[in-house]
Image 1 (cartoon, rainbow, N blue to C red):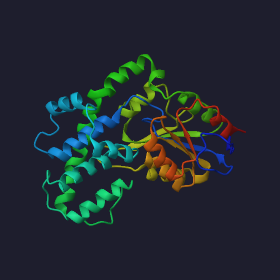
Image 2: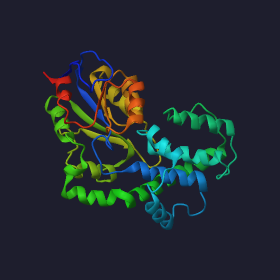
Image 3: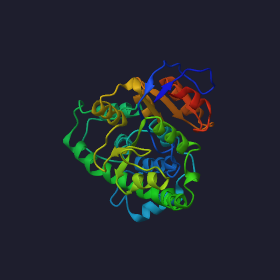
Image 4: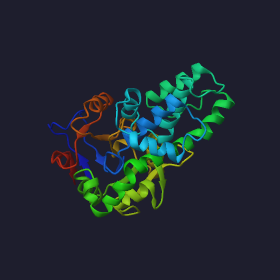
Length: 319
């Protein structure tokens, strides 16, 4: 088993008590995998929606090509910041935010309550993903149900063209290049000491495809008794927030939040971990100063650049 051990270390941010860890919930993109360079892609897709709306054929192959060619070529202040702030949210929530912003900017016209729309935009900025208690017009709900999944698929096409497909080919030849340093060692260390690892993602999970395929290409076997027990995410039409997934796992296996560890680079998974009393580990590059401040304010326990720092293994002691 693994027990946490508080030490004086530069990677320790928020003090934590000694506890036994039995389950670990891990984000994938940016935490363990480098296959998807998603922020510049999402930023340009969301910005394009806000500026141009959802015109007929907005998800055409021609527009996919245009955004692939232009992704990451210039700063897009609002959507660049949104990608940082919303990291870890389900992609469907991120798509919905852009559509709602387009409604706010009048590039998308629909009968709705503007004050309600603004309220939900604010909630998304705060990291919220559920607002079933807020009444909306049928026109707004219908427009969102038709366009949010469609925009999500459009975004995935741009992502595939920009980086995902070519990186997947390269990863088959050299998986280590697309793994965060020390990732495999870390996951295997946890597994060998009795921890059950779960990958939790805001992306769509379909066996043998997409995120599932990427994880297996990087060498992480998925299944009962493997290095990763399961990978859980959303569908094209139904978002499942990470806090919901994690709490469902707690209930399913009868475990307490304090006996879990949450590892990620996004605001949503770390906040979910803090809220359920888990030991939290943020994986952030040295240059990510804004993200670091976000995670520090949330109360993350540890911040690491990769999984090679030896203090990780002095904090997570094998018993």
